[in-house]
Image 1: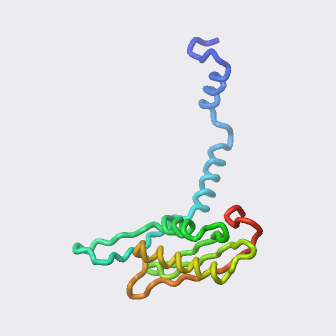
Image 2 (image 1 turned 90 degrees about the vertical axis):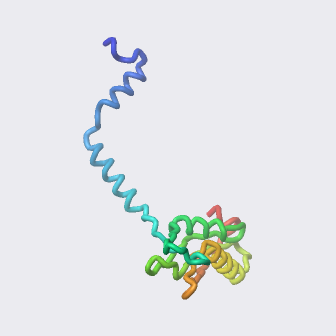
Image 3 (image 1 turned 180 degrees about the vertical axis):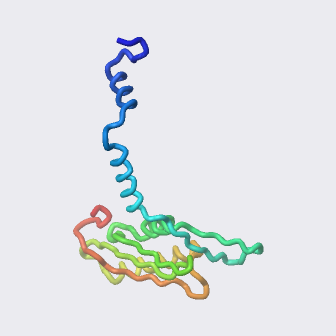
Length: 153
């Protein structure tokens, strides 16, 4: 046994694996990363509208991922969960939010839809995402009705 090799067989195996590359691994690794990048959509910036314009003309944007996550948290409860959220932007301005919800059996569907619309409007207002000149529209589609807690589907 060479003096510079670790005495434990697992250590020798680890070192040997780190020093070699399996044939085709680089191509496979590149293919996997390309597929992952294709699945993950880049976050789009959404322009905010402060209550008072900033004196220096600065503007602030919020990531669409942040807004989507906030909408999911706001709407989810024991009877309603989101299956999809689509943010429609025009020139970095939020003009429409489309929700697909899953509700539990025996849920008052119109009331669940109205609740989701109200919560999203409140969130858009609190995050200052609504263009004062145009506002933002919220549409809700009940995509499915399930037994039990829809958050577990």
